[in-house]
Amino acid sequence: MVKHIVMWNVKGASPGEKNAGIKQLRAAFEGIRGKIPGMMHLEIGVDNSHVDYACDVVLYSEFESQQALDAYATHPEHLRVRNELEGLRVARHQVDY
Image (cartoon, rainbow, N blue to C red; front, side, top):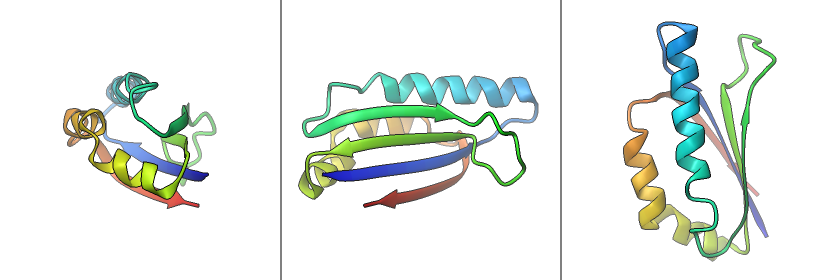
């Protein structure tokens, strides 16, 4: 099993704009649940600590294998979500293990 964790900071000039972006990101990723072969688990978390060094959103997902994670990177549903969210994030961090 491979765990794929991605964290983002979402742009927004106001808390309302940032919250709208977070809502859009969450809905986009939750919409691919069950559509990606080899993806065993997908979870979206939103930061509630509000410390200045925290990321806004985290995606936690589990894949059957490295091959399944590699296939996810180019899967049409994942590419659609990436395109839909283009320009929404101001920072992105990733860890796979």
